[in-house]
Image 1 (cartoon, rainbow over the protein chains, first blue to last red):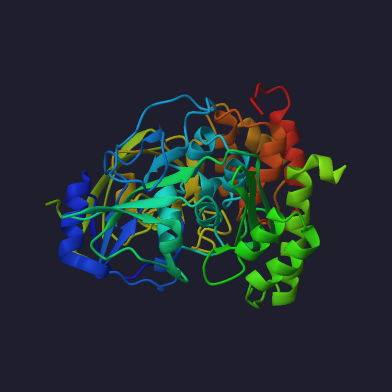
Image 2 (image 1 turned 90 degrees about the vertical axis):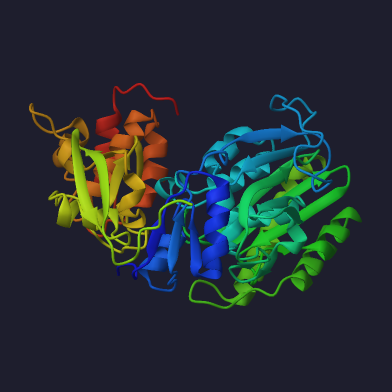
Length: 294
Length: 165
């Protein structure tokens, strides 16, 4: 179908966007890459009064390597440029308008890179932005699960304020976040795990929505496991992580089952998704602990 | 405060279409696929699912293949748009088109313009044959060929190309 009527603006600064959000509030829809919003418009599942095109907004397209821990305070503190893979960068900060393929080229963690490679088809992925996919909050999407797994954070700006929200406080429900209607996502921080990481996914076709996607990393602070496609929001499998930290893979599979409440839909039943999740976990652990696998 | 175009007003959008500066005057909600067909008068871009899944409407904007059905017309203001009409030259078909012809990589032809545009963008970006077959073609639905002859077409079109991966 065709989109319903809406007003349109394509401002060039974050300040202008925030001013428009003050006037229009939740009647405004923010257009980043458009690969989720425009289908929703075409299906008339979204009927905004105003579409704010972020494509011409300057200052949202930088990628920086930031030292220090994420969420530690104001933007810019402890920030320094460093080369990829030098070991000094703890967080990769993407402007909201950064394309996911650019993030894949800049993030040192192989699990992050592989997750991005599973986003849509190339023609879709080329348009997908970091801020867009994090703000859209589709629980079947890849980067939201990565954000949750790595305890990343989201930086928001309004006409009066700037704040940083931790991943655990970001996703609020299906396609819902704690972003206020007057706020714009301006940056997304994805920490770099200090050990190996992995992404695995099962979809009907590559590029289709995940039946189950899984991010796993093993660092000095233990295992991290998060999944997409298995609930209303991206799921951090904390029980599973604890069992992995205890070195018991079978117990981790049982715990994973308890961590999940996968949906039943046309594409897969709940039990099928649980089964896929267990298989992915075993595969991830085998690949991230070669000594055990051998 | 930036200008807001009301929903019922038209907006002038100027872009380079297949090498010529083109202006369309359409409401903000107009999809690029519709502006191309109804306003710019190029009908080769096909409209299939209108939700980004089928790939029939794929065009090239600033050297990148994207869905024209997931693009609002004002988004291409000032940009360079290429459609299937630009692909064949005065000397005949592009090698990609010729390969699809030679290997019978099409039947009804509905999906073909989008596939050609994706492949043209992939070739320009130096995408390798395996990626072109496995990933670029993955972004297109073709219900006639079973993809067998399309894969053959890519193998023919890619033979002799210098590519990165």
